[in-house]
Amino acid sequence: QVQLVESGGGLVQPGGSLRLSCAASGFSFNTYLMKWFRQAPGKEREFVADITSRGQSTTYGASVKGRFTITRDNAKNTVYLQMSSLEPWDTAVYYCNAVNLNHGTNYWGQGTLVTVAS
Image 1 (cartoon, rainbow, N blue to C red):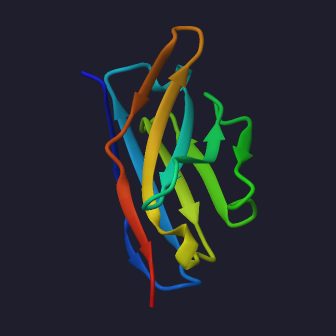
Image 2: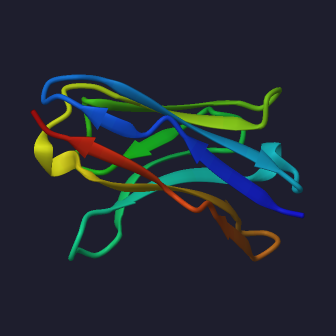
């Protein structure tokens, strides 16, 4: 059974930091491109970052570049999103996404809520 389980969300003050984790199971994690998306209330889902299967390349959305860092640990089947200099507009549900273009498979986690407020 495929599972992506996000954790690490919560309430943080503006300027603070938070690290999200996404634990994967049920598929060959080390062959998947891993992505983070977010969706704020009343807005469309937005791309945050992605990392290639062996972690050799990363890409970031313009709104988070320089503040967020995506990493992965293939030995632990986990992808991380380190978020710093958080601002209220970073408030959203953050989703983990696994993609394998060769297999045509695409999996989503249930999301974890990040709230940035004083």
